Image 1 (tube, rainbow, N blue to C red):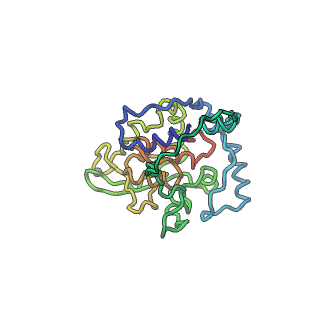
Image 2: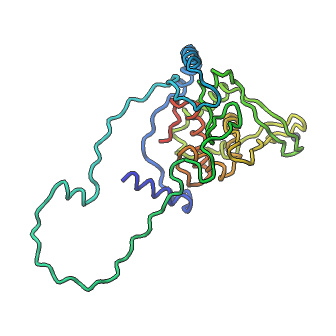
Image 3: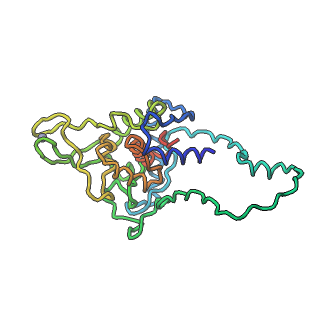
Length: 296
Ligand SMILES: [Zn+2]
């Protein structure tokens, strides 16, 4: 029943005004942002994990290994309820009842049967590349993997000494272009705390601050809110981690966001606030797979 409901959402999100889409009512896992931050800040266990990973000889061309849990307490596995039959045929199979049948009338003349509506076929339901696209790519940045729309996790990045993430920005007023840098740990922690604190009330939609990012100030003409990120024309070369740390993912088009979701296996229909939310949490999950970023 749940999957049927979900499919209905997927088909309708594009067509319905937002107000008519029922809000999800499933409970969210409680996340304590202070706990998350405090587990993040002292890092001695990270170093031992790093040493362990170093001994495994990871290199930039390899796939990211599933990292050991960083610091966030793992939720206890919940006992899964046994699926209950919800379909009358299944109920009948479980409880066969003998019903005396009345004499059958003669069969009616054959008539054309109404055909069931064709099921919607999802294009490329896995996140494999389409025809003519290679499985792996040349990593566009040292912090990106050789998979489309996939960045390395924090353990790997710290191990490799990657502590700042750079990207190109261009002034909307004077057109100057230059590179800016973000401190990986500082900016990610800021974002992670925001998500931990607000996830339960975002209702799986990007907040306005993500939809309309505040841009950096121009160093040359001093215009405020002016430096927009330069987003690669080739989607496989988009600097997702830079956009995330600057909280400028919302500068991407819906098509670019859908590309991210396509290659990371997420639901990818719906309005921009939905897809943007999935993208934010998707990049965060890549960075810290054990953090509070799983899509519910
Ligand atoms: Zn400027």
